Image (tube, rainbow, N blue to C red; front, top):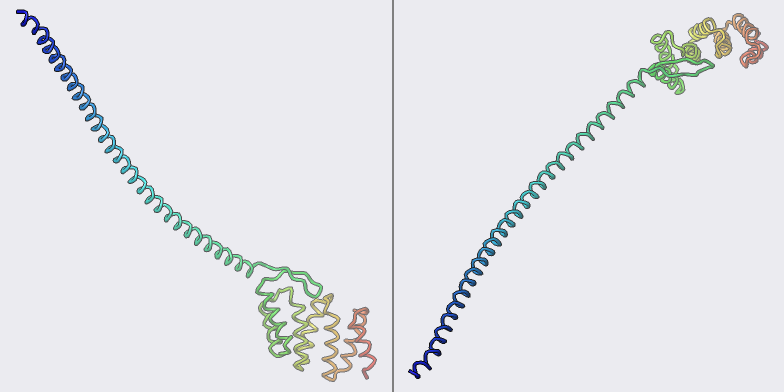
Length: 245
């Protein structure tokens, strides 16, 4: 009994220790399983979060590519619009230049010639200048034709008295003395105060002298001296009168 009594506490102690160990193992296992579940859940959540993140990144990348495509499309449209605007501006500029040119062709211009101020159309001025250019080349036949055509085309032109004067000079150079007298007489008759009137009278006398009509030439020169005594043509007329027989 003593032996049994001595053995029992030891045996009971061993059993108690086994129960405690089992309990500790069970608790440890439960904790491990709980930790494993927590870890698995965390891993699953992390995997899900990573997948969602990757999806977000993919969606963002797709959106960026779409925006790049839209930006490229808009840039292309902007370049096309810029080209169209540039072309429209060029066309507008060309149209304006054309309008200005047409206006210049018809809009009257101010002319100052032989002491007179008047307006003329650009075409009128061009035709008169062209006749003058022919005269400067000493092409007296064509110059006579050009001045005559000018006065037929522009019967009320401010250029008429000057055209008559130069027509008479071209005719004189062509030795068409009678025609020259008629042109200069018309100038003197219609525009007696014109700057070229004294010179026209002197030219008339020269044509009359060439036609051997000294009597008429003397009368013309006397009229010139009386009507325009201070003119250079009158001084030349006095010399002519002194030489006439």
